[in-house]
Length: 474
Image 1 (cartoon, one colour):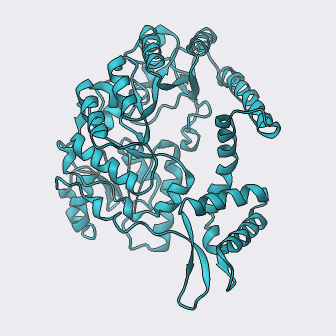
Image 2: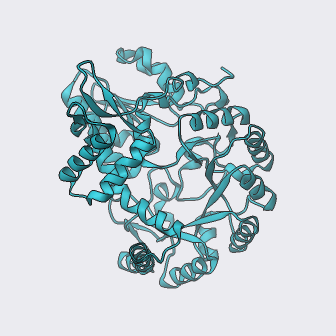
Image 3: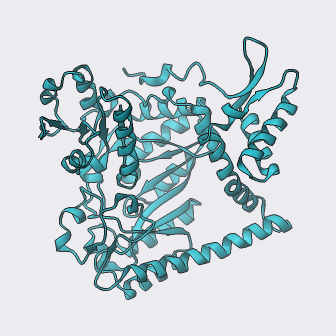
């Protein structure tokens, strides 16, 4: 039984594996991901229910481990593992990074209940490269996937995009650290999207010092409608201290380019960086507000494996807790000599209060009819999400979907809505709308069983979902 995690959900992921071990002590449990890759020995010491940690990129390691899984004496021959043997921690050699990403099959999405994911309405993610040459002290990218960027073949990337669109995902997020860092590569990927006539919305992450008008325009013409920039601070000295490698002038230039092309932008800032003070917070606030595009703030979280975590004594940072449940970037887990947790909480609260005021305006406009259609769409989406998540995570379609004989689909949907409303206490009209959207989107359907009775169920994956699990080049 294997699992992965990042720092903020590590305790929950570890507990799942320990629960599996309690239920079936004979199973082998293993965990991978960025947190345990740099916290392997501590993980095994703290969680006796976890047998193996897979460090770094896991695909090759897992493929080598699988045939030896039930032979612990053979684990030594697999690079990239840390495991327990007779009470001692054993660590095999480091696993080399995968040189040719095109040798990897597409993610086995056919093994997931795709209709549930589509019903939530979130974009599905894809990676077109791995690696990051930059040295931000708060980031794991360089350590986890290497300093040299490795690119997938653009044709295979667009093969995967085309497959995702055929599965019914209308929106894609390119999750690369540095999608826009190589102009020639951007041109090839975007050109292939246009050549195939694919029409879909997508977003990507980028650095402000790697985009120019030509790059943004190519992305826009291929359907990209939003770029997210990590800006981190409005203080120039802070940007140098954390080795971000950008300047405020480059942020302004990227903003100007995106505005000219008509590209939406989102900026991300971190509060509580080394050397943070009331003055640097004010400078960041003024800079962020002056950008006039959507932005948000996260609290600094020094994850294991980052330069900040491993060389904490070099920086003006005091770690307040090692409770990984609190490392979600939504609360302070550190302090600086010039900014207490209370200081940064008050700073973020001012921003959140402004957001709440704006949201209250949208909610009022939704009720009195003064909103634009796009504003109403935002409000409806926000209202529907808790209902959707409860229906999906609570298996309510399965448990409440059995229908009496003879009901037509409309009446059956109304009855399902009544049952979900009674079970959850949500607004009946909102529940009905969510389930109607599920049905119209083809995410749920009314199916008859062998006895002739009907029940609502999540629609099965399309028959072609499995066929694209291996790229055409393979």
